[in-house]
Amino acid sequence: MSARPEDALSISRALATAKSNGVDRLDAQLMLAALLDRPRSWLIAHDDASLDQAQESAFEQWLTRRRDGEPLAYLLGEKEFHGLKLQVDPSVLVPRPETELLVDWGLRVLQGGPLKAAELRVIDLGTGSGAIALSIKHDCQAAAVTAVDASPTALAIAGRNSQSLNLPITLAPGNWWQAVPGQRFDLALANPPYIAPGDEHLEALRHEPQAALMAQDNGLADLECIIAGAPGHLAPGGWLLLEHGHDQATWVRQRLAGAGFTQVQTLRDLAGIERCTGGRALPATTSAFRVVFPAV
Ligand code: GLN
Image 1: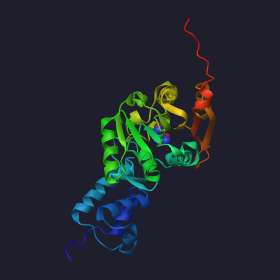
Image 2 (image 1 turned 120 degrees about the horizontal axis):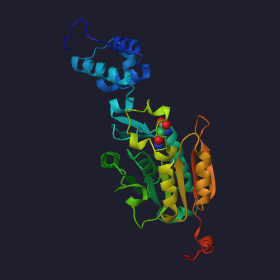
Image 3 (image 1 turned 90 degrees about the horizontal axis):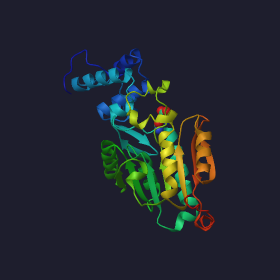
Image 4 (image 1 turned 180 degrees about the vertical axis):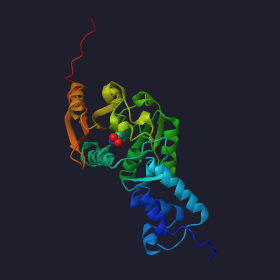
């Protein structure tokens, strides 16, 4: 046993320190599990074990950062999403549980419909850590998945996650559909920025990339851009599924209908909030009826 001074910080004292700093017990346990490289169950059975000096000072720094509101995922450098362990850093949004709803909807679309036969082309617009794109690829290996992001650092993280999880996807840098000129997809998913500038929630989210959270036009500018470009980038009968803010579902439904989408519908998240809205591009058979107005 390596000798440690009498006052070495034990796990139980570390947890008490976390509590007195106002840090959640589970968060503190996850920090200690990461620092000691042990499962959380081990910590519970060995609460008299000591941290070495490096672990102790790292723990203290993490407590300070966590108390300042930094997401635990940035301290640990990872976040679990849809059963995948994703690397994250402050250049990408921390993947949220409500976004798993969007992934599950996308998987139902892929597994359910007439899209099944063809090679499925899927696009995740604004991929960040790659959460949506990689979850779809993991559960639907037949799909050819493209992940778009305007941020090169975000795309590099998505690429690292793709490699470490052995889930090959295509990375496309650029703004929304501009990243994939001339390409069409059977399924497009996006969790774009949708918080209005000045919204009170932004303060609590200050450690995350504002460009991934905040959108102009009262939070609607990026949703608008994605919907406006979708008809030109979806295959006939293809689906567009969007995550949006708690008070944006009506606007998204109307905008999708206005852009010619059918089967427009909204799903609620676990908190009962209308969170994801999607619709289907016209199938090939009906597109023949579209009227093209001559230029005046
Ligand atoms: N749902 C996130 C939040 O409010 C925001 C994600 C986003 O803007 N796309 O914390």
